[in-house]
Length: 112
Image (cartoon, rainbow, N blue to C red; front, side, top):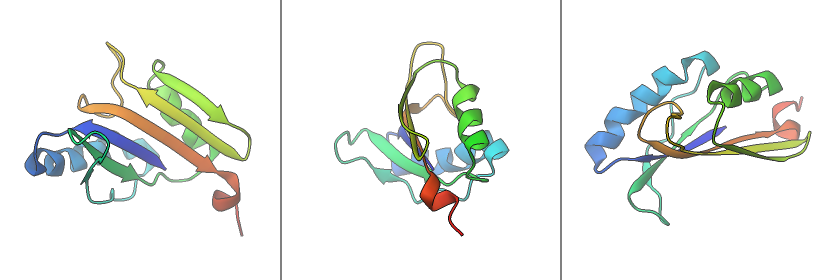
């Protein structure tokens, strides 16, 4: 799962960003993002959640490799988590994206 917070001044700009995020993430076969919602702690930002496919370690690593700067990594082999903060000269998916969180929980994704 990739959770993205982006600068969107109004509903129209959030609606326009959604298909651009999908196109930029096409290599990771994202599902249609959840409807954009204002982020309560920072109302100037809008939250989008993309479910990426396949939910494998390789997909996780490809997202991280797509932007070599700005990541902070945490978790372990079972629960991987990486947070991206925008830096000068680095863009993740679209220039409006300020912050992102990439999550993968092995028990959920490898069950069955």
